[in-house]
Length: 74
Image (tube, rainbow, N blue to C red; front, side, top):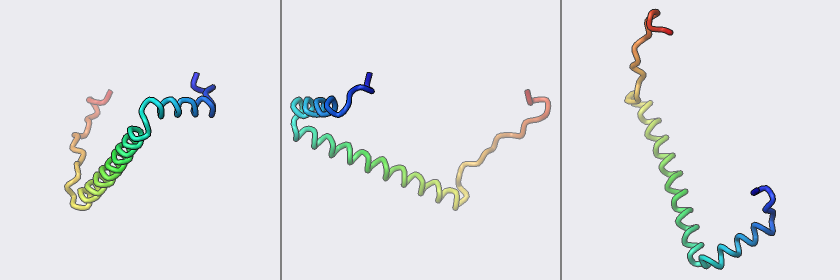
């Protein structure tokens, strides 16, 4: 169904959205989306830094699962 939209269909959808919401509302919405993306990227990079620091300090989570015995294996 969505494969047959094409450029004229996309332009029509864009015009309808612009008429319904107005230029100001759309620009503020896109600004909020941009702020959200920036915050997400910052959070991901901060998380990676925390993981790297934990590995360097030796405080990272370790696997403490006991070794399986021969009779326990299925």
